[in-house]
Length: 270
Ligand code: COA
Image 1 (cartoon, rainbow, N blue to C red):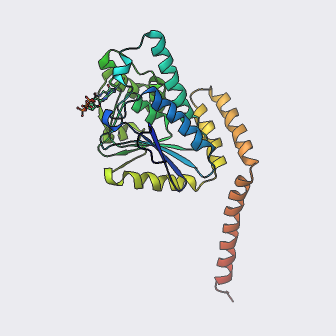
Image 2 (tube, protein in one colour):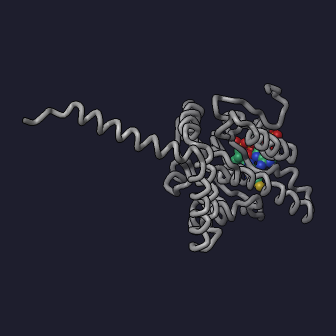
């Protein structure tokens, strides 16, 4: 669909569904309409068999997303702020738990809710001029779309505190050292980099990836023994799929064929 007035633009690139936050003049700051449209587009991408990977980005050259719309936040009371945060958390949880791999293609500022959105994705691929921050503390507020929880899960408590309590903006290169960035690309190569990575992800069995992601997502939520039980159960469920058997069989057959070829070409010793 190419209606430039839509809050979220969706485009298909092979197995990749790219969702673009479409409010460049406000650095893609979130409105409730955008959030609702994003949820609907995520649901649509999840329901589409041809889509194997979902990526998110921001329109314009400056920002992935500069967070929640501050002009709107100012007018909220406590109850509506609570509802707003729960709605944001629900949308981000859909990404975090989505059966298909997700990539945040961060093309500039990823601030506040924009940073939370990126952290809710499985991977962050950032342009070299991207930057990340939780500026909420500078507004006497705090992250509310899962930022405190996701940041700890993705970068550890000490690093999460640096972001949330300092409000400082960190460059993509600095963030790479924190471990939550998968890859950095030059701005003009960002989409091609994401596309190539998505093609790799899409080349694997989707059921195996889904089961592995479910097990990974429980790490840190469950005590180790329960996490291991969950992992073993996911392993068994995946093992019952034709894809798992075909993958293992393929490896064994390749080895056998190679051994047979080596035996055929081996010099005959007298
Ligand atoms: N909410 C609402 N509007 C926002 C916004 C936000 N989070 N972030 C940027 N905008 C708007 C600006 O008000 C401006 O609108 P205008 O042209 O109508 O005045 C437009 O987007 C461009 O932003 P501007 O501030 O002029 O760009 P800049 O390059 O000077 O600064 C930022 C960029 C990101 C540093 C700055 O916009 C900023 O600090 N934004 C707020 C980030 C934030 O605190 N996010 C957490 C929210 S809880």
